[in-house]
Image (cartoon, rainbow, N blue to C red; front, top):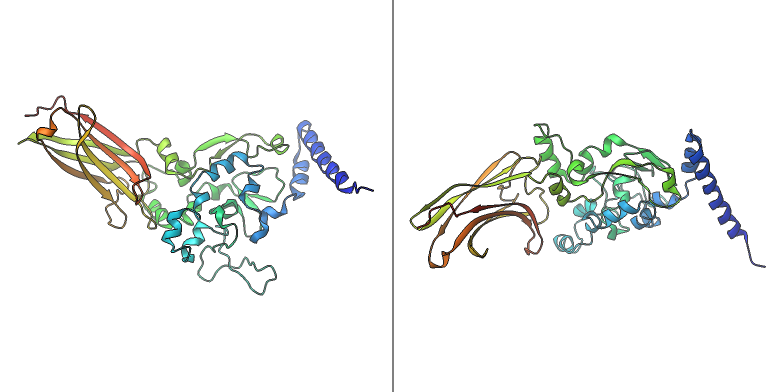
Length: 368
C-alpha cells in the first residue's frame, strides 16, 4: 500500500496557510493570526549558523526583488571576485575575510570547541567580526547583515514571516550599520556629517523604494507596500541620486604664445566622505583634461590621479585646482573644445565609472 501520510500532511499544511490568508484578509484585527503564522517557524534552517544555512538563494524564494538586487551587487561578489582573491594572497588574510564573508555584524563571534555545535555567540577576544567558513561564495550574505545573536532575523520593519523576526528600525537607518565594516569611510563620515548634509550611507547607496517585502505566494497577500531600500549598495546608486555631487569646471583659460593654458577646479560639494575613500584595495579617481579638434578627436591630453594613499583625495567641501598647458602646433588646427572628465577606475583601467564631465567650446576664444 502506498504511504499517503506525507501527502495528507502536505495538504493540511497548504490548507492551514490558505485558511489563515482568508481569515486575515477578511478580519479587521488580525494580530492573533500574524503571531500564529510567525510562530510556526516554518523555515528554521534560515537562522542556522554553519552549513545548515542553505544560502541566500533560499531567502530569495520569498524576497524575490531584494535577492535579485543583492545578487547583482558587489556585496554578493565580495569574496569570489578575482581582485579580492589576489589581494589576500589566495584568501590567506583572515582580517579581510571577516568583512568580505562575515558571520554577522551584530556581535563578534568565535568558535567554541567545547560546544557540540562548534558555534558560540561569545564575543571574540579582539572584539571584531568573525569570518565564516561556510557559504563563502555568497560574500556579504543575508545573514551577515540581518542575523542577530539570538538567531533571529532583524530588519527595519515588522511583519508576518515564516521565521523569527525582530524590528530594529533605528539601527538599519543609521550609517553605523555600514560602518561596522567600512570603518575608515565611516570615520570620515562622522567628521563631516552635520554641516548641512545629514544623509546616511543608506540614503545614497540604497535608493528608496515602496514595495512589498515579499513577492512569493501566499505570503505577499499578507503584506502591504512599505517604504524600504533597494539592496544595490553601489556608487552608481549614489550618482543617480545626487548627480551634481562633484563640481567640475574650467577657469582662467588663456591663449598666449601659441598655448592654451588654464585650470580645472574640482569641489566635493555633497558627499560626506573623501573621493576616493577607503584604505583597502585599489581605489583611484582620475582626472582627464583633453584638447579636442572639431571632429571630437583628442589632440592632446593630461592626466591626474587621486589616491587615499597619496593623501590627495578630494575631501568634503575641498577645492582642488589642476592646471594644464597645451602647446598649439600644426596638428592643432581645427581645434574645437576642452573637455574635463572625472572618473573612478581600477588597476587595469578596464572598469570606469563616470563621476562628472564638463566641456568648454573654444569658438569664442581668439587662437593665433
